[in-house]
Length: 311
Image (cartoon, rainbow, N blue to C red):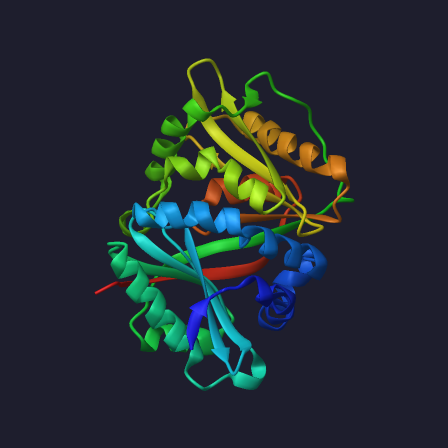
């Protein structure tokens, strides 16, 4: 049976994530107690009420799908709804229940839900070394869209050099319009068709931050004529590691201003002394990746982005 995640599933979700993504969970430093607390908060009655009202008006934020076998959660996936695609992530099947078609069943259910939300495409990311998963996705119609996000890691003990820049200031919501145009100008056309950058990804969501016990801060480069580059950093109550976004950088922004922008994010995260800072940067974002590399980040996981039409 495929159903939605329940509060009673919270205790077992960490074990499934640890088995499904051991390297990623080790890097993130997710703790079972915090994850259980957050799942229970996200699925409590008042949050479900808000999500239910949004769903009535066609604004579903996410669906966390579960395969239930005799009352046991044996497989899951998270489905979110960007502008044009249903985006699938966290496809996990317990090792004892693999090769029974559960992953494919979840993907089909996700496709149906995306069709209900009038999305044109399905999209997902998969580790480039995960040959069995890639084979499954390609067998059911997914094709490579391009290099997906690269997860990068910076150990907190790594020294950081350089100073501040008067061009770096905190992000304000009105910056999002200029930043989304910069982001769209750097995205390959085929990716732009399926996963176009959205203003909401820059503005963030206070609702999500509260639900996930996270705090996000963002900065831009502004040399007097509006935002030209952006980076955000997040501290979460569910994980020991901090997170930084892939820098979005306009073509004319000088390297010293970009370096100061990334330093601002690093220094903000280090106030809580995390053991590491993780980042995710799109494979085609060469300048953003170079900016993180220059600040001491190193590649640890590389993904492919795959897609298929919903119909």
